Amino acid sequence: MEDLKLVANNMRKNIVKMVHNAKAGHPGGSLSCTDILVALYFNVMNIDKNNLNDTRRDKLVMSKGHASPALYAVLAEKGFIPEEELMTFRLINSRLQGHPSRKNCPGVDMSTGSLGQGLSVGVGMSIANKLDNNEFRTYVICGDGECDEGQIWEAAMAAAHYKLDNLLLVVDHNGLQIDGRNEDVMNTAPLGEKFASFGWNVFGVDGHDIDAVTEACKAAEQIKDKPTVIIAETVKGKGVSFMENQAGWHGKAPNDEELAQALKDLGGE
Amino acid sequence: MAKIATREAYGKALAALALENPKVVALDADLAASTKTIELKKVAPERHFDMGIAEANMMGVAAGMAANGYIPFASTFAVFASGRAYDQIRTSIAYANMNVKIGATHAGLTVGEDGATHQMLEDIALMRAIPGMTVIQPADGIETYATIKAVAEYKGPVYIRLGRAAVEDINTSPDYKFEIGKGVVVHEGTSPVTFVATGVMVAEALKAMEQLKEQGIDPTLINIHTIKPLDEELIIKYAEKSEYIVSLEEHTVMGGLGSAVAEVLAKNCPRKQLFIGVQDVFGESGTPGPLLDKYGLSANKIVEKVTEFVK
Image 1 (tube, one colour):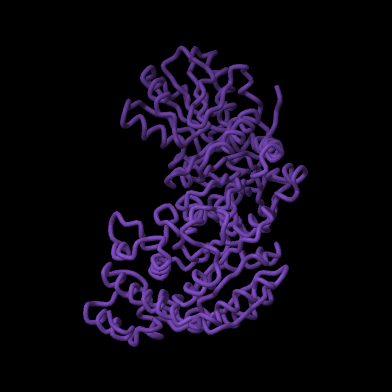
Image 2 (cartoon, rainbow over the protein chains, first blue to last red):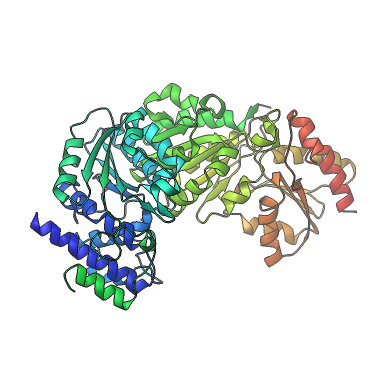
């Protein structure tokens, strides 16, 4: 497990470097979902270099597409893309688009960026897996602010209606969105109760505890006839002192001094 | 001559296709009896998915099923498909290059009594503007059947524009062949006038041409079932032989077939063009015949306008 913490730490360094290099991007919400991605890609999903191009495997939809730096960072950790390619993020002719594009980048299972759409896609993948009578699972990560979108709730209804116990949603509950705190911008609380009333199994975990996220994902596999949502309590900007819990770091690039400080916070180069 | 709505043919074609191809699935948004996806449900209930009155979600679910190798036909009325779910079609289907077929029924004025909220007149423009989207509007039941077979074999997103009202079969020739992106010359005329029509306007154009013949005007009629990619070669070929082009569509004259034709001709072979279509207004309640007439799309109105145009 200590190794996975190092993986997460390396991803965080890459995230701030990528956004710094591109002079654009979304560090706050990328840093908040980093540990969730580590748990999913290293402990939960059956995905590796050998089955990457196979549609018959577990899939992940990064519905909060602006957290693309975190997604690309984990794909690099898995060896699906070269780590040095991360520095092409958001630059012209790059495979690493500002928001993930499945046509461009290996390992990206769905193109996202317009919020609220990924859970529906996850529902479609899960229905397909049911039709195929296979054991593959679909994972969707969405933001808490993203839950403002009506389509999330359309999809939540459909997932419960079709008893998609092969679908798992993780809500990256960092409490902040662009304009400020969730409860000030648009109150979605109580999120867990809302999903429960839509017919979902609900788990709550510390979203920075890789073991806890892993255990919740494994426990979800035992839940039958209903989809599971993990409300992962997270800190926006996690790991970088001046970004933590600051809505202002939702979509802003650090300058040279800020990058140096961020890397220092993360334990050096 | 058989008379059947293109949506009816759509349902029958879907059911037949589902029996042949286990990867074909249908999604609907609480309109299965109207869009006719219910026909697939009768033969393959396990492959029919009602998403309720939630079109945005339906398009995303279709994208997800396509990602896992299925061929989803997602259906609802054209106004909800292309209007309400535009962003889902753009991002989750087209940008992601998903093999989703959108069966958009109840397009145009001939929806009738439901009125303007349900009469989609802008969808060709909206869908044609999306990169990678194929846009097809069959003219009759025969062509609809051929369309559904063809799009199932084609890999990529397709928007299929279908109608509510019954239309007469026109593609009855034994030589009739459907190919995505290839226009059909329905009548080779002797006058320097070429009609380029799509959907129900092909039949309306034929009626108008009977009357025009009495006045000594004998236009060529091209049926453009595939509005995108457009059969540019065919349109240029006939424009070169013509002085006058008449585009006919049950759609606003902004951004639809007429615009697509004008874009091609402006670059290659500029001609005077008469745009038969809805002139930047919403429709209203009524029955199809009087509606087509009031908005200038009936055979009689076509005759009046064309006579004036070629004078």
